[in-house]
Structures are given as structure tokens and as C-alpha cells.
Length: 194
Image 1: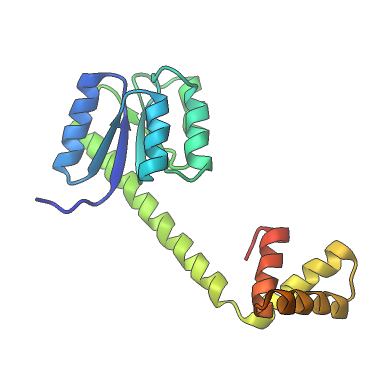
Image 2: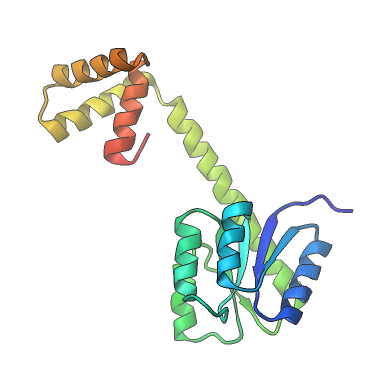
């Protein structure tokens, strides 16, 4: 038996198609979760945090573009839509997805599995890059973090460099944490970076 590589939610209304997709994915060693409506799809996404959601664009109950937005903006997963026809509405939906990939129905097993493998490879690569960025943030020299935080406070509150430093030093002492932790909090709050 193959090791489970990735978690995939299959959100497909048609039972026959959903069963076929799940069978192919399980044969490839993926952990597969089934949903036949948008509400179960979102619940599963929140519970399982899958690597990928295969989303039937004909799923009834909620606008597909809204679903993609909820799933990807909340960082629950990435979405690969599945469709019978590629039209302007579908192209717009595709432009809203982070991966920019889709599955065309009727399904061809080899093509389907290639799209899934490529999408998962892209997701793994994005996760690696994100992890490297996070490590770089953590490894940023303390002085650089403090200097950047001081600059933000100086600009935001019209403080002198000394006043900005004194503010962070006081917060550091009040909360019994290192000054670079306060500086990182300032960066995160005011610039969206840490």
C-alpha cells in the first residue's frame, strides 16, 4: 500500500463522478474526503485542512466564486475547479483561484491525475518558499528589527528616534519580554510584517 501523500476533498454533486474520482485518488495513495454540497465542503475544509479541494462548479447552494474566496482567503486549502464547459464565467472563476488550474469533464484518468499531481507539486513548492520566508523573518538580526520598528513608530506617531526606542523599551519592561519581541509586534501590527 502506498503512503498517504496529501489530503484532498472531492466536492462533486454527481455520485457516479464523485465515486470515480475518489477511487482514482485513493489508488494513488491520497487521503480522500467526499462532499456533495457546498456546506459540507466548507465544514470538511475547516476540519481537515486539506491540501487541495476539487470543486464541481455546478455544486448547488452557494456561488462557486464565493466558495473559492472563502476557502482560499481563509487559507483552508487551494481549489481546483471541475467543469463541463469552459466559458467566460468559468474563466473569471479560474482567475480567482490561486493555482489557476482546472479539470475538464468528462474526465480522462491520466489527464486528471496529471493535473492533480502538478497542483500538489505547486502547493508543496509554495509551502517550502513560505517556510523559508518565515525562517528568514525569525533569523533577521535583532538590531535590524528594532531599527525598522523604530522607523515605523517615528513615522506613525511623529516620535524622535530616542522616543521610539524608549517606548519599545518601556513596553519590553512592562511585559517582561525582550525588546526585539516588542519590535516584531510593532512590525506585525503596523506593516503586516514580522
